[in-house]
Image 1: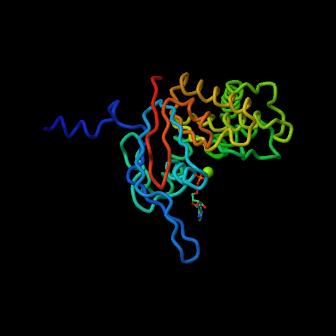
Image 2: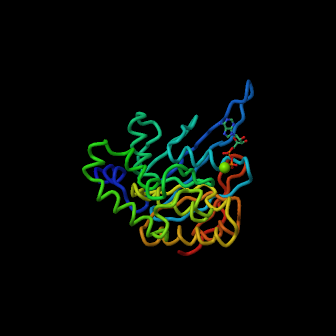
Image 3: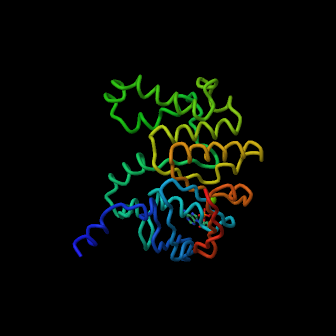
Length: 249
Ligand code: ADP
Ligand code: MG
């Protein structure tokens, strides 16, 4: 029996990397309560590439925000490697958000006055104290350059966002999300603002990061042909998760 108890505390291959357990979330509009998530259960395995689809307004972004600790559920838990994380003190959640999760959004959210490399380095400047940043700046700059290389933008490092195409801006945003070496990438409609071919390029980049770096990826999209390229596909409907398909990696 002692063994069984110990097992429950250990991260085994069966322990999901990231998990939503019985999540409820409502928004209040004036006096009216609008339920969005009603008992969402979702398990994402380590190194998995999972797509989440669902109609506009079905709660996809809401769920991503809860998973990435950008917002809190009304009821339910978020677990990382089997441990509850949504109820931790704000400071610990901030740290987890910065270190464990990488975020990619539809509209890139690059800072227009910064160059590409400055945008990519920005999360590290936030993460380290000024002193630590300056004493390690060469190493951190090299890391940023390596990420920029990974996304194929080495020839653009001094460009500002308005000098980049949509696809390049999304690549830059992906490099920025990777510079903190996250374990989980949460991508909310990453191709939503791109033409089909450029969007395909972004998905191929995510697939490569997923296989080469064992990065766990959860991608939201309303485009089913994009979603089909992931290993597994689930749909958010009426506030719950429907399992759709799974294919061998
Ligand atoms: P999706 O990403 O699937 O399009 P969202 O998660 O953005 O859906 O939104 C789900 C529902 O919750 C929508 O009806 C939206 O209007 C509502 N909603 C989202 N955020 C808020 C908010 N901060 N306040 C009030 N209602 C919100
Ligand atoms: Mg959304």
